[in-house]
Amino acid sequence: MTIYTQAESNIRKTWLYLTLFIALILLLGWFFSNYFGSFAIFWFALIFSILSSFFSYWYSDKVVLALTRAKLIEKSDNPELYRIVENICITAGLPLPKIYILDEAQPNAFATGRDKNHAVIAVTRGLLEKMDKAELEGVVAHELSHIGNKDLLLETMVVVLVGLVIMLADIFWRMSFWGRQRRREKDEGGNAIFFLIGMILVILAPILAQLIKFAISRKREFLADETGALLTRYPEGLARALEKIARDQNPLSVANNATSHLYIANPFRGSQINSISKLFMTHPPIEERIAALREMKI
Image (cartoon, rainbow, N blue to C red; front, top):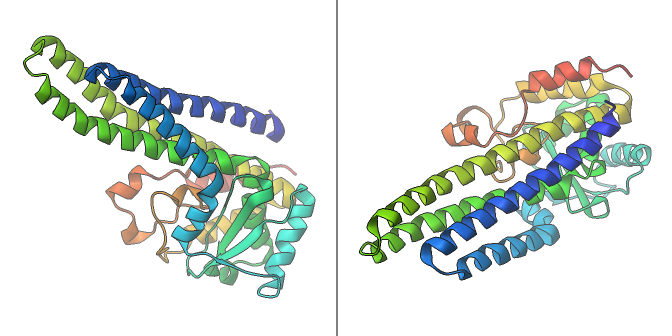
């Protein structure tokens, strides 16, 4: 399988995963519509998912940039970075994205936006300070590959849908206890079984949503590594960059579970890695990514 057929395969799989997300949302809505005897709950779940997807399509990049406190720069602010991004964009056949810098010591980077014409690439101050030119080119090529592979919108939609499933599950969890009190005197046996099924569904839905998110994010990191290496024709540059990023122990103050999957490498370090953070790690082991890059034949 070539890198191009793999990209097509991953895109098809991603749409399958998104279909599963929507199915989860509708299943939750349908179940609790029946449980409470009101089909309005199903319509609420459906309309809410549509509105959330619409919002994420138009405003996801602005939300991410606000959360990370990234600052827009011009060519005069960092000519070398601009030239690197411009050159790789020409190679990849992509329009030049807006370039942002995060005032953070940890070397890291991410891309966001709804499509290649509205894309953003952001790098940290630490990345600029600690990478040589070949390593910086490798990181930039990786992020531009996310744009070229049409990852940005799909990954953002997945994040929104994960949050939506978790939010709806929490709402229905609370409603179910209220509904059980109201219906305690009506068909107690059947209602108890229905209640138990509902609780199992509410517990499993967020877990399944997270597993789907992990599968998408991890596959796409490998794909972006390979595509980026093809753009620079030098896999070792990105491999060395990933090694430096992995060794660096500086925390990323703006890191959070909502945006951590966007970075080229897991942004949590040291004390930032707790039991909650581990549940949301979406990156494959960095050692596996480095090994895959060094096995590439270009």
